[in-house]
Amino acid sequence: MKSKVLVAENLFKSYWQGDQEVKVLQDLNLTVREGDTLAVVGVSGSGKSTFLHLLAGLDQPDHGSVSIMGSDLGDLSQSKLGELRNKHLGFVYQFHHLLPEFSAQENVALPLMIGGLGRAKAEMAAAEMLGEVGLTHRISHYPSALSGGERQRVAIARALVGSPGIVLADEPTGNLDEKSADQIHDLMMSLSSQLNVAFVVVTHNLQFAGRMQRVSELHSGCLTESAG
Image (tube, rainbow, N blue to C red):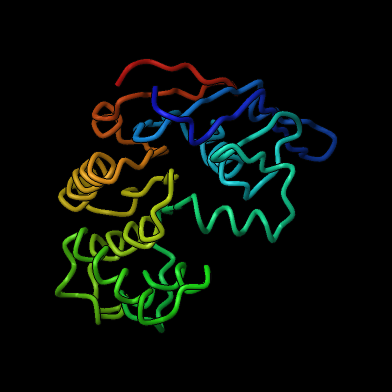
């Protein structure tokens, strides 16, 4: 049996608009094991991004818990939570969020340096990971000199460089053309298998979702799962 990398139990989340309570998530449960690939689909406004932010510890549930690698995020201080995310969790956004003043290699090395690794070793590891995503020839380029697909490859390399147990991705190809999106889909599936990293991906792309091992639909605050 593969080990659990993420467990969410009985998650509830509401927001208030004036005196009106809007229930976004209701009693959500999810278990992700090493190497799993899971797509979360649903209409706009169904709470997919909110759910992903709860899983990453970027937001707190009203009730329930999220554990990553056996650590309950609700029990951690902000500094310990940051350490856990740096070591065990990668995150890929729809927009790459690369730092424009740093090269591709420096952007990918940054999480390792934040985690305490020396610059030389961090940049060596970054170069190796950029090679894994097919960008060896672009490591010294700055984000402004890269295409949209290349920038997202750098973002994926940054998410994976610390050998996390799980990567969370929020519409990672939503800002790309169809060809670039297909290439990113292929890359993520290949890296998940190759590195035994779990991926949880929020996506509107049902074709991509269908390639994942598992598919969950978020509707009316609840998850319904089917095989991918």
